[in-house]
Length: 309
Image (tube, rainbow, N blue to C red; front, side):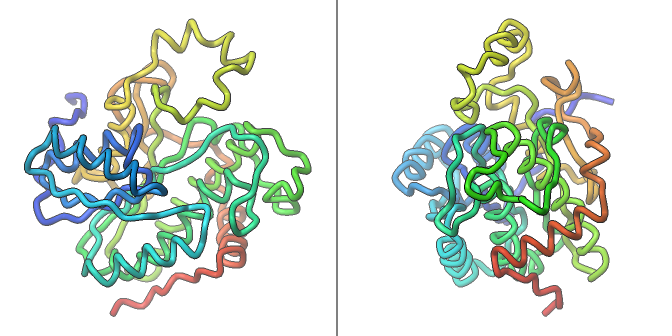
């Protein structure tokens, strides 16, 4: 079978796509590719100023691009609600929600709502956003939720007695990152099960970029382990356009099925064309997925409305 590339993206005219963190890195490259293939793209960005810079860059590369900027701060539940309300008012449907935004390896900190920042941004923010956009997703035929995880999910462990590293207890930047990326996959698979249970014409898919050159890892670039790995990484690291291919395939390939996970197919998942890959055993835990869903509802106050209207 031929390798999947950006040339395999179908025409997306009439499709509406929201890309969180669409102003930089993998989100920006994804938005460019989607706009190039005639999707209507909404860049959901914490900074509308940076979003508008990205919008101009996309339109310069894709003059026919239909690209809009909307403010969204995933570290603020009020901002998520405002974004969803505005989107639901102006758009009748949502074909693809690309949960791309994230932070990695940051010092301990909390969101506006008091959540540990990496779990709060990477998982809880997207959990709340997806729930608040569910009505728009249900209005589109065969819509998709694509959530970007990481190979680092394999280092993650779920500790529900201290899920958010309260007051920094037990916190390390990479331990928290691994947990948040494991949460992304537990969420993806549980969301797919709930779509199927409630007869929702939507699929939930995950992706990871492998080793990709973006600003995401700026907080850990000076760590000893990263300096030791640098000679290896330099040989396999992909540019952002290559790193975005797994999430693009998850978002648009007609052959993709709910509950699948896409990542690079070479160098132990670090680079290469996107293929379906296996995630860790921990990411497949039904018990942890259900518990995480319950905790996420409790923490965010967002409950999904499954009835098809």
